[in-house]
Length: 162
Image 1 (cartoon, helix red, strand yellow):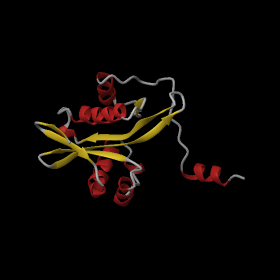
Image 2 (tube, rainbow, N blue to C red; image 1 turned 180 degrees about the vertical axis):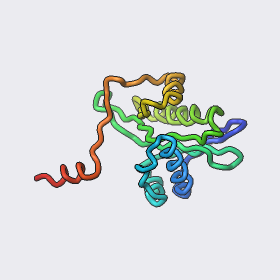
Image 3 (cartoon, one colour; image 1 turned 90 degrees about the vertical axis):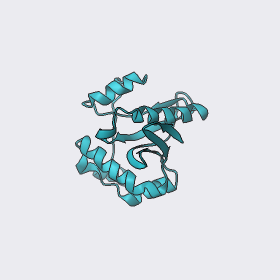
């Protein structure tokens, strides 16, 4: 799909579920969130098989070294679809080869080709190397917004209310 002298990027397929799972666990450890990583290999297989999520795999010499998972969203302000990049991770020893840029460029090209209005993602506020990279590719921080989450007991409690 996309090639570079030292790496290649290809679409993730359901059979990549084990690779995605391994790399998600590595990402969770890097982000100091290993205790939150509950997804299984089967979860990734199902998500990729049903196209609930799109994925990219980076390979160096045929070995997977990174992944990007994204899915379609919709903006009520623009009236058009967009993409949300859920996770991007490249193994530390393979960073600075252009893999991250290739991931974001692939999603951006797809968004433009499909008439989408934006590509968005979150980043942990302490991850300064990632934030600096995002600025270099032209992204702007949405400092006036804060992410919110409803899960676990709170999710079930709200769902159970009359």
